[in-house]
Length: 194
Length: 169
Image 1 (cartoon, rainbow over the protein chains, first blue to last red):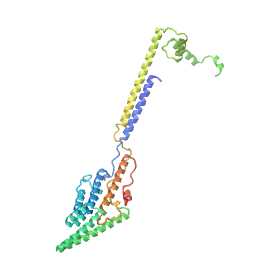
Image 2 (spheres, rainbow over the protein chains, first blue to last red; image 1 turned 135 degrees about the vertical axis):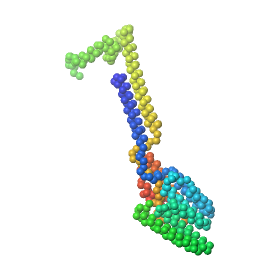
Image 3 (tube, each protein chain N blue to C red; image 1 turned 180 degrees about the vertical axis):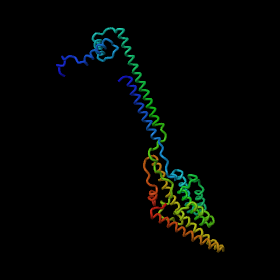
Image 4 (cartoon, each protein chain N blue to C red; image 1 turned 90 degrees about the vertical axis):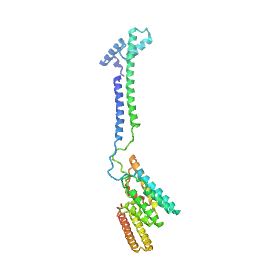
């Protein structure tokens, strides 16, 4: 083989090698197409919020067991006031966790005879659970008990009219709670619970 | 080998080869391994002083060969450099490698309803509920990461939630 042929062969081999490697690299750079689903992907931001909520729930449990119900409420408030993941979006998990936190706060407030704040918190919680889910059913149930307690307090205070009104509201809420739970269970049995 | 062939008339190829050998013997600048061998044998048998023309021709031939070698080395060196650059581009400066093909199916935010078998008790159970939610979504996050890496495909998220019911870790 002559010198010229040697040189051409060497350059050809190097060019083919370089070309193949660069083409392979370009191929790897292809971006995957955007996901068609609009819902946010489960990511570290969502997990961070859920983890925070978990910590505060357990903190509240410890405080509650030690008799510090106000401390438990404060711990749970840290969930409702925490920065939410994906600002501007309503992630189902976050909404359900908030709904459950408000239900627990209301329940604790009832235990410390703060039915007025319990009513406010359970109503706020319901805004986070607009659909028929166990979370909404649970909130309605708690709300019913809050109204039942208020009715008793109003009756004790001699406000019979307001007491009767609160009592009727409690009945309505508890029936709604049952309807929601039955609806959810029915859908679950049909295999389509959402 | 047939010895009768030794006395056969030379073929055209043999005649051409002998002509080339003769020319190479007369002109040392011409390349011929056979001529070189014959000259070496002759020099070994009866060494003589090197004629100036012969010396010049040898030097000229050697220099020409050396130039050819330099060209080959330069060509290979440059080619090697190009290949090395390509390897560096490929392995070092390649940035994040993403799997090709369709986008991986990723777990998305959704209701946690299916993690629970029945309605909640009026009091208690909140910590257990949040535990289950966190465990389920942590699984989703891990699966998403694997799916992005192209390591494994994601099972349908909702059916996964149903399977997670009652699973305590």
